[in-house]
Image: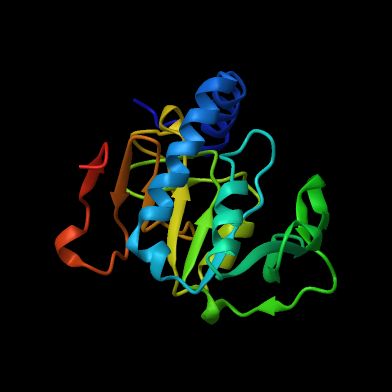
Length: 204
């Protein structure tokens, strides 16, 4: 059987995402928030890189608020060129403005955060697979940026948007954590070899 292309899979998964019930999305995003913020790597992180969610994406507003409340340095992405983004520190929602693709980005007064400063990157996706393969939006922004990070990479994805497998290219960056409302997959460059590849379901 011929493997589906990334372009066709992306189209299918975006269509599936658009049809998800709002009540399900709210419940799923709440559980994803709880799972992420209870992870030891999140609790230990002094500097986190977090995307600012759009309407259809897994909601990151509570993650941002929690990080601010715990005194973490919060960096969010800003597109600075075609396929290129950098991270800038924000101290609250007031530091955000509408940028490329109508996505909220850090304002011009925000300090750039160097890749080596970041401890944890919370990454958006159209879909993800349990082995850490990520399906993005096709622009290459995150793959280029993540390739220069030593930080743990965590994708947040609703369970109904998880795929068993995703076609990948040599330049694709795999995730270290895949977090849904039902499970956490610890994969990729996970620091503890004993937990590499383990999927923890339902908090067990």
